[in-house]
Image (cartoon, rainbow over all chains, first blue to last red; front, side, top):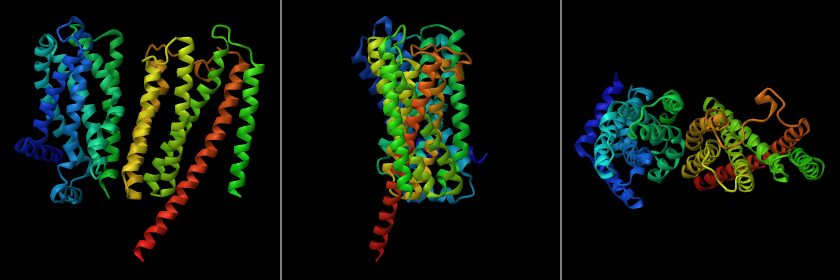
Length: 222
Length: 228
């Protein structure tokens, strides 16, 4: 259970400095505000693309959190020490993924009511299925993002490279999460043909978690 | 010797492409519903298959690099990806031209088209990552991992027309449908043109591989000169 200790360490360190948390949250709110200028936020059609809006906000805010996942360890050569420690690459990676997952989910749960207020969307009746979609979508984003954070940690252009690599790759999860969120925010239940999106989201999480855990050791060992 | 073989294969590919172009334009009849524009299909689909083969080669080379740590495999993966991207671009552009004539629009946000574009962007990201890393072994290792991840999008693109209801035409080739949905002569021409494009891709990959090998030798000499 060392990965839980790694996750706790990352969460503690982030909650003390609130470096990426504050930046990510304020960035999410700014994007929510900017979207309101692109179309009529009080229109009835908002529910039809509400999932897309929300997940774009999460994706932009998520990149800020994920960028810091491994970059946080660069000062004082902490990353080298972590790699040299008896903690396996998979445990280290899983711990960091869980920490980013918790932070991102927290931001999403703060953004959801703000979104509801700004865009006049009722989300409370479908909160639990929505939470399920958030959990699955966020895990997919986090697992890929943390892996790419490890891939790009030593690059001078890492702030640019991470979204460049992450966004196209996580489109399956993003598409599915957007679609399912829209269905739920429109007041409908997930069923029938829409189950293909749920299957896609679960499949994405399983495939990329397995691949990431299998390959992360290769990335971390120099 | 190697150069001569490459030239020979290149010439064969060129001749075969010319012969195919003649047969496609003058011997094969128009398609009943689409008219003459359907001929673009003889380049659209083979270009897609060629790109898939290149991506698969990149995947195998990347796995081999991670197991054997030989930079030659990394060079193969990079060359195959670059050539694959070129063929994927041909696939996208020919598809857009066909769409403009048949659907009246250049681009439809349909699952197959969108996935083909995502796939292209994902592999473009692979090349971007390579450019951003200076150390050869670090670059090879990280891009091999990314190539393995990228292949998931290739698999999804392949299955997109089955998983989603799309505007894009469904599978027509007999090996996928299990029945003869198109004229056997047309299907034969598709395979022949795929063979010609695959030969061309092979030549392009070997040329790129050769350039990469020379670049590595130059870098090595430069490092030695700096050390002196």
